[in-house]
Image (cartoon, rainbow, N blue to C red):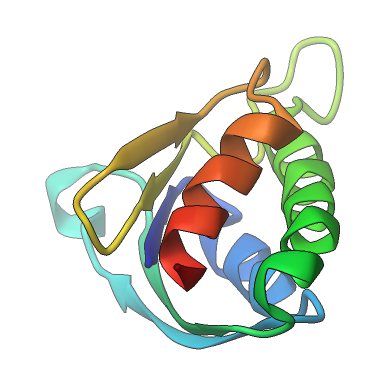
Amino acid sequence: MKIEIQGQDAVEATKELLAIEGLKGSYQTVDELERGEPLTTIAEIVTILGGLGGIVTIAKEIYKWCQKYLQPRGASANPRTEKILIIGRNGQRLLLIRNVTEEQIRNILEDEVR
């Protein structure tokens, strides 16, 4: 599973994502600053620990993480990240936006551990 994160806080967000208990992986940055585009990181989640039983907890933590990084810091501020995209190993994609649900996240995680 890969997670693409774009925005000024992409690196910070990625580090926090990979600190979620039950996820193991690494990330790299894609330098697009020369083209005037936002910083992008690609997190490669290589292991989801806990099997199907741990998925509910991990999905809840990813949901909280999304809400934190997709919310503006103040009334006139931009969101901390501009785009978060989960790409499953079977090619399924889930664009995480403010109204994403825990169930949507859980479904894509369950496909990864099957």
